[in-house]
Length: 88
Image (tube, rainbow, N blue to C red; front, side, top):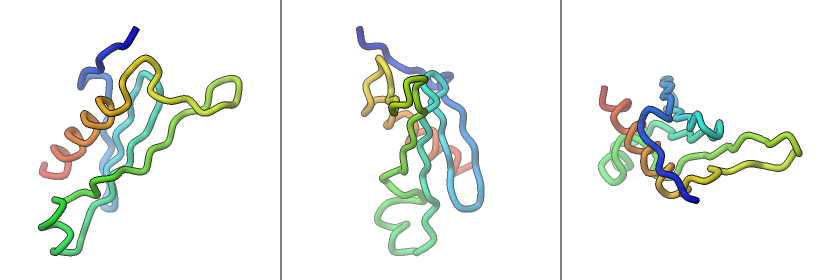
């Protein structure tokens, strides 16, 4: 059965170069790079639109994913939280 994540299921970490958003339920990390070129910022906003995504490994050694959560929904919340952090 598919579940829906909430904002409290995420942790946000900021640095000068990127904003990382961790989906705590599966330990998936979404890294959004901060853009510096004014042309890129005008087109995309302050963050890269496509994050680097790292999924935690399962005990079996295979890569995990977002579990019973829809990947596009998890990614959308991660981007929204990263965008809020970039503005703040």
